[in-house]
Image: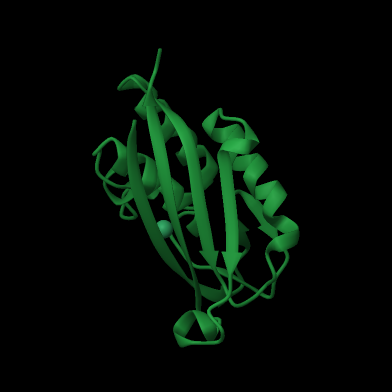
Length: 158
Ligand code: MG
């Protein structure tokens, strides 16, 4: 078994959708980025790539490449899982935490877990998503952005 860590941050701005874990969450601001800026899915992808020492999402899906403009990050996650499989690895489990002052994410967590689990081809019980505020401190506390961190394990196929 191997393990990896991922971390990501995106800025919150008006006029963008807020997509977290592949779920469209109603909110007055959304995350800014080249892709859909799904910070949670990005952290999960980096944890998986890290587990197999295969670089990071910036290397595989560079934000200078128009191909990834507006990309659905869950589709990119599927591509990462396919990359792992080609190397003989499957996802074991994922544990992630989203740091966001607003909106309240608890009602959306089951849907996020379901989408991520489906994309990775694992049972929903293998995917943990947690959310915390930062008690109003710093940039996240001022609702200027959202961060996410994730840990993943991968197992040899077969
Ligand atoms: Mg990102």
